[in-house]
Every structure is written in structure tokens, then in C-alpha cells.
Length: 105
Image (cartoon, rainbow, N blue to C red):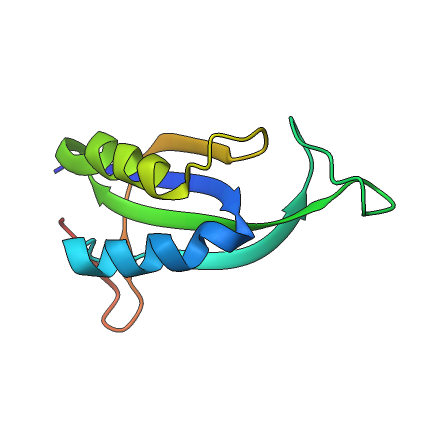
């Protein structure tokens, strides 16, 4: 089965909404990392213009990747410049470290 990796950068204040609804809808797993960056939005209160954000990573099957990405966009959206980005990329292989087995999703 083909796998996809969804990677998103979203506003820090939207992360609780994303986590709550991901868990309620049964998204099987996600990673969340605090990051800082700039792009369309430049933070005027930071000397370098960096805004606090959260990077979200989800690995899922190809057939639901677009659905998960669109759901994530709905949850993270404020309608204001700097809401973030979402990408979807192919995953060649996925291994579970515990038993070193290749994972089929």
C-alpha cells in the first residue's frame, strides 16, 4: 500500500484544536514539534521576524492523505495571513523500530 507523509506548519495557538479533533476522528498518529520561522507572515515583535509555530507530521495511507490534510487545514485555519502550510509527499518505506519490521498501513 502506498504511504504519504503530511507535513504542516501551523500557528501555535491552533495546536490544541488540531490535537483534540485528530484524536476524536481517529487519526492514527501524529508528531508535533515547536518551531520558529518566517514566510508570508513576519512576526514584528521578534528581532528576526520569526513566528512561533508547530510542525505537524502524519504518515498515512495514500487513500486518506488528502482527506487528513484538508481536515488539518480546517482545524488550523484562522483566515489571517500566516496560518501556515501543508505538504503531502510520498513515503518509500516505513519501519517500526521495536521489531525492525516494515509497516504496511
